Image (cartoon, rainbow, N blue to C red; front, side):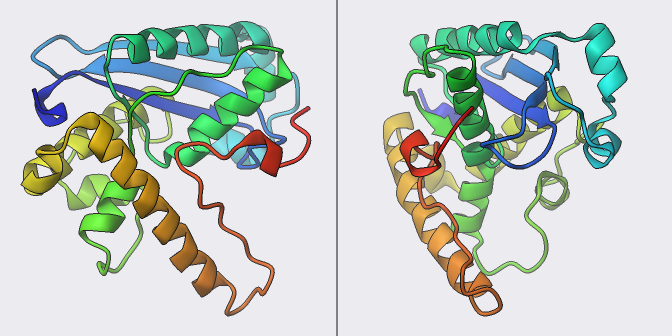
Length: 234
């Protein structure tokens, strides 16, 4: 059965910031959808153990005070998310994550921080990588809001992890519907293709950024940046 009409598992994090080495998870969603079955979301709110900057709180709506009052300990949340995604991978369902390189690397560093085993390898679908590959010369933004608008996908409450995770699955489905060649690939072949596409995209972005910043670096690895290339994870 094509991945395009099978069950998918959306995964999204909201965090204290965008530094995968130092920032922390605030909210997480793992949501299974599609395949002719009900949508089943599981959500977590964590106390990240550090202050949530005002700018981040304005994006996702979670303040330090709320996280401390209502959130579960970070180590517990990370363990739960790893367990949920591990079950998904074991069942053969692909993980769908918009800009997977960020979310999966963030989860990996949190696992290391709390002495937990890393997530097993499994097929990943990244709407950002797919969109850049199939429509590489389109002008404009490529964030989730822009992709939802372009592919006519409802977003709901943007910048909540549940809404973003579901929207990522819907965008992936729409891309598969529009570009039948992608839908025809097996999950394993699609994953391997994205590894190469993501590396090419990172190289192109790095070349562009170095026109103004000679030190600019864009990690080519996908869907996870290896720990040893990014220093201390504490």
